[in-house]
Length: 369
Ligand code: NAD
Ligand code: IPM
Ligand code: MN
Image (cartoon, rainbow, N blue to C red; front, side, top):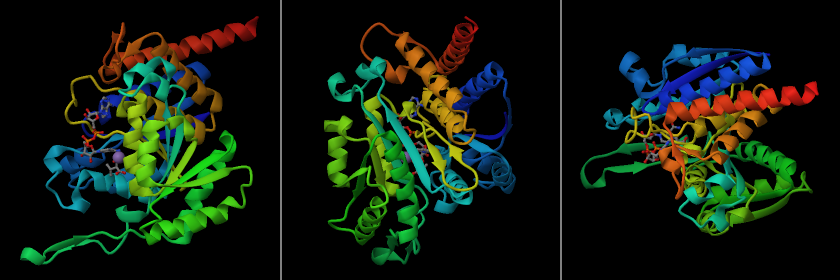
């Protein structure tokens, strides 16, 4: 199969982790006989430094013309003082919006091998497997009006949280489909005891629920959800929530897996889908070769699954990640407690690519018998 992938390494550890994700995708292409092409473009701080814009038109055009986008991370401390729309983060938000990516799928997978990498007890996190479906183009991130205005003591700032029914309905459908495919439980997370947006959210979710009688639906307040996620993560299967709640809950959920560096995501729903690890540019470790590339590599697996419909290849990348962890290899952020081989970003990527080739060889040998 032929696939044109736009790669946006971005800032900080972004280039380090995307390099490893591309390494694994190249291994997939080689092992399974696919033709993947990769074209790099600028986004975020790297794009501001070069062109003055966090999302240059040439980058956006390339993304919209490709089969899928693989993104590293954006954000750099030297641009933190810029106005909102000029910041590196605005490039990412503009990309999601231009791609129409309204649903952000964030799988939280707790591998047995890394259960002791979490600060939580192993018996709490073992076997936890939660899909967070985060609404990605609405709420406070995009709501108008928004401004900082005025002078002196009455200078004020405001953002607007707003959702219309259609926006809730389309992301709810994505979550219900996922819940139906996984066996049937959906937790819709809101703040309906306080917010009108949440009351509308709940109404629409209940309406969509009637089309999915096989899915059990529960509603939970976001503050309680933050607690239950740490207390008993296995009680969740699919969590559906609005943009900001999903941003916060997914970073929290990363603690279950040991590190933010483990989490992958797929931003889908429009013309071009964007695959991005959940973490940011991690300025504190950028350039040191320490970053965990597994979130980026797992994002590449999601690209294979959703954009390329290559389920076997996607599952093999995930199995390769699992195999490397089971053999005891760890980046520093998931060091855990005992007897592990600590490796850097590049070595971890290489190990996954090698495990993938081994897996394919084994399957080949099995079929040859
Ligand atoms: P961050 O995710 O960059 O880092 C938070 C902590 O997690 C840091 O201690 C970091 O070292 C660690 N970490 C993150 N990814 C890691 C990895 N792959 N391996 C090992 N450790 C990892 O969040 P932050 O420090 O709050 O933000 C830094 C910048 O990144 C900001 O400019 C922010 O806006 C941006 N950001 C971008 C994205 C994105 O591009 N999708 C996501 C989040 C934050
Ligand atoms: C994420 C990030 C982004 C978000 C920022 C960098 C705009 O935190 O992808 O989780 O808030 O969506
Ligand atoms: Mn975030």
